[in-house]
Length: 136
Image (tube, rainbow, N blue to C red; front, top):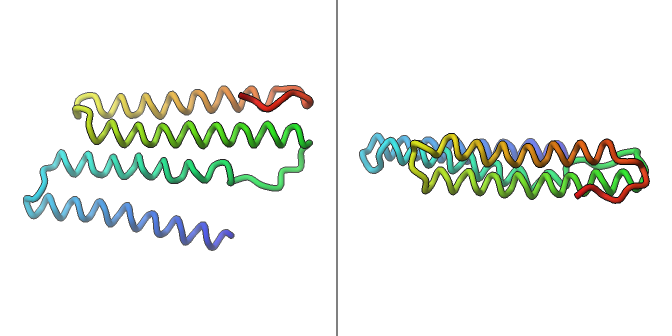
């Protein structure tokens, strides 16, 4: 399993580097402007967040906790995956279409908002009594 994860990580890193190199080559060849390169790299980063977010619900297995707590943890992982998937898509869309003057702050606000929701939900999950229903 770990070898597969390392291989997938290496392939994703190669895709990111390949995309960045292709954009830089296109800029050097006067096919695109520097703004397109910046936007392209940021879109790749947002899509990377989206891809990795899909692994969150599957990431932790074999916890030695009660079935109720395990259900709460799984619900929290599911919500985390959804929030970061949407944040990654929002990050990519903002960098693709928003004016550069607001793209940086707006895209980070989207990711920060997702992180805030996830942290609050994790706090609820960890502080709930054992017999409570799953968080959010």
